[in-house]
Amino acid sequence: MFRAITPYKKWWTSQASIKVGEDDEFLELAYKSGYRHLFIGFESISQVSLDGANKSFNQVERYQEIIRRIHSHGISIQAGIVFGFDNDTPDVFDKTIAFLRDNGISQATFNVLTPYPGTPLFERLKAQGRILTEDWSKYNSRTDAVFQPINMTQEELLAGYTRVNREFYRLGNIFSRLFRSRTNLYWTLPLNLVYHLLLRFDKRKSNVSG
Image 1 (cartoon, one colour):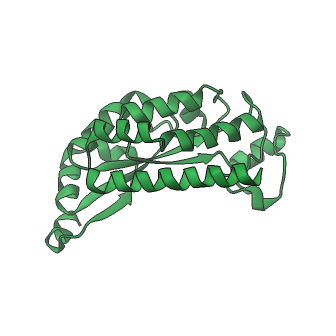
Image 2 (tube, rainbow, N blue to C red):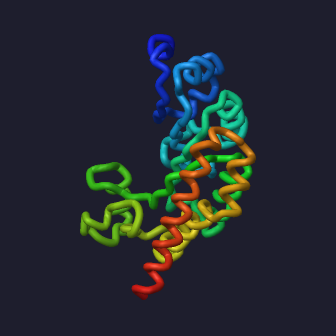
């Protein structure tokens, strides 16, 4: 597919598993075809949390190497991160920010763990008496924690999630992250600055409402 679309000189992005970072030929052909940005569901920087979520194919010990390899091919990375696994403690937020900064991650999408109805996670948490509401409008992964975490309170989970979003897109962190990878700065930098302004505006609006 990469060889077929290369002549069209298109710029494109996609989502894939972390396994793509193990294949240099794949990455080289992808870049030549116009592939510039990759979303990867890292999910967590805790191997224990990944194992518990049946995502042991994500190996935290290899994250740094794989990120470096993807960057070396001129492809920037957007990380998918989830907070609220049973093994998450309040220090997971600072550790995650440090990891993303130190590895030059261009963008990140953060979510609160959400046990959607009909999933094994929902059934397990319901059996444990940890589902706190069945108001489905709150199952949005952003503004509500609908279950009781083990190692922190609901309030700590939501506050940590909010703080990570703002800290990730703080100006100092933006420049530190992007100039570590130096990948696609011509568009990743402006995009990060837009997110910074949006979050700043949202914070001010929240303060006014409060």
